[in-house]
Image 1 (cartoon, rainbow over the protein chains, first blue to last red):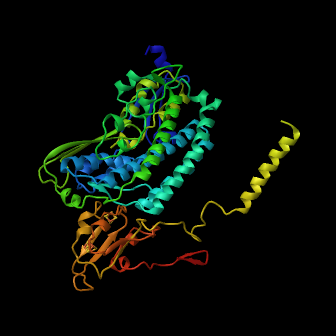
Image 2: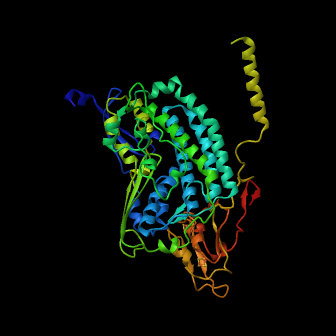
Image 3: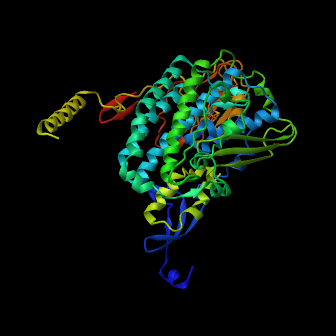
Length: 378
Length: 143
Ligand code: SF4
Ligand code: SF4
């Protein structure tokens, strides 16, 4: 920066009290209305989850994982369960595989519905906030009917799942899907064609795929650039049932700037994600086979694990979510657990994305990346 | 946009408003009425001491150390008293899954607010029953 600019520049802390900052803090250097430097600061939500995991046994660990990101609780607890299953070499019954997949996709829908409502609030379109949040309530009711809790679901256990589908929970899930499929196309047309929304989001936060990959972005942020990078297809998980249904990785390509994505593309990409998830659930629901939901020996086997290392990963709502687990011989607790959340990359990519934009666009840029603080302060 | 179509729109809005005033509100009049809780709800626990065998599996399963067992306190032949600390419990359900003797269950009661922290330490007398102090508000009694 040349000295004249530094003289004029002001430093502003965006957050942690600001409502749109959701409790995290970013230091912005501002000249006039333009941001010239952006300095993201992680650490305001730190709860030492990795250390906590070292003091919990293999049944209890998944509870901490789901508390990192309550919005995608089913997805967040899965990497841990998967890593334990790998080390203990547990077999998952067919029924549990399908049920897990269904609930993980429902969780993805729920999380994305929450996100686009919140994104509306950040843009100042307040009515937009409440539309998806009403639909989301129906998913929460279905989760509650199945597991007994609306957010802290605690569903997957090593070797299967804890709660069985009953008639009512399936009916509630279908009711939620019906409502979603009825209302989402209307909302999508209304929002994506709205001139106000286009003005706020087009050409804002533009990056290309190579940059995104360099920064470590994954999930919808990369798929919005037109790259079909999805763990569900690229690395089919034997403990999940994505191969049982017919689906394509949703991607967004924009004619104006192919290979790049702006906030508008990321929004439309996430609408496509919701539709894909809904179609996967629709295909899997009639295919749930009969049988046990958990391997009866699993509890005893997961009590003490042999020495080993495992890497559990899943395509989360916000990107690739992974957990590295290392155990000592006959251990009751992990020796080391390392979480890799998808949002650390998206939060720190603000450093490159934001400079040059106006202050009002800052909220749009970070809102469109769907950051969740639990994933970088773990 | 003619005069009549605008008038029609106004009538439609009025009809909608009129209908909405006649329907039941979307919210619940808590505490006069409570929402629906499914059978699986993970609310506060109930301890059935007749079935308990003092195996302490629930204590071992708890991730937050919310349960304390007192094996000296006997009511039946081989049971034990459980003390629950609801300032710590996260309602994960692991203790209920760990109990193989049908002695510990979740209930549908989720409104656990109390005036002091000490009131949330449930002793064996409160763990064995669902009865609780009635809630008085503006001269009326609930629960
Ligand atoms: S529900 Fe979970 S936290 Fe609460 S007492 Fe039982 S095991 Fe402990
Ligand atoms: S409540 Fe169940 S698990 Fe706990 S001590 Fe009694 S029998 Fe054992």
